[in-house]
Length: 379
Image 1 (cartoon, one colour):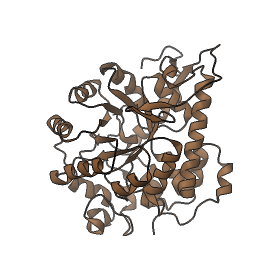
Image 2: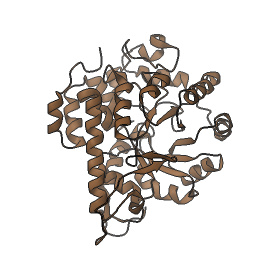
Image 3: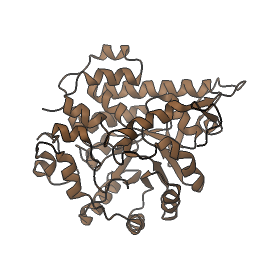
């Protein structure tokens, strides 16, 4: 068994007061290879660290004398209500973290009133997760087996998913040295449930000095994904289409021209190109390149409610949150994810009101500064 068989007692959750507290608690529960699989980035992890530095260097200029007695963090994402401008990011193999895997996290997301994104490499099927989730999005990798790719889209539609999210920044998995050093492979009780390979996949065949998961994705993912494929996907689904993994404004504009309803500004949490620009830095130019009708979400590095406020101030409609929810899952399953989301909601509402904003739309009018030079943010 690779996931943790231990969990913090429910009462202990009351003593975890930030997402950093929850992460620290999780680190003591997870086996090192699993912890590294979740926490690690590509290469020397420069981009992983830069994502956090970008948030830390951004300062909000709060507004005064605003009546925030009715401060409301609720919004809409892709036209559907969300209790706060947050969706759960797509992350594969929740079953590594907890026996209930994606089901536990999806239940907590439903209770929190935010969308849950089912990953192609989910350890539970899209049908099973959608049955317990609230608003559900499906994340799609472009597979070499095109029939399977489009069958996944059909299954997502039939399961009642509200959007398809195509990830475009993984022609193959970035070189994640923690996994390489650990010779990381999936245990037999964790599979890519949406695919048919089961435990026969390359992801289960460990070898020293290599990541079995990376070997599996290299064989399964199609690195020839290009703009005509995006156009084909747009024609093949009636669902709103989200394009995830965009950093260049020109790519964002072209995605919108191909029919994308939203783009996710993301460097895959620092797990792909090491040295890529922090997503937060790329955000304003991407927003400026898009028509107003195309929503912009920010992924990579969000670790608290103030980070959400900063993303909104720089042009995002909302954010995706990934790793913090896996730490919560490790600590106490559904209860741990619920605690994580409760803290995130409390932090965001606090930040929103203290910045003089009555709702998320007001946060888009806030001004920012960069801590490094004290002048106006160039972002």
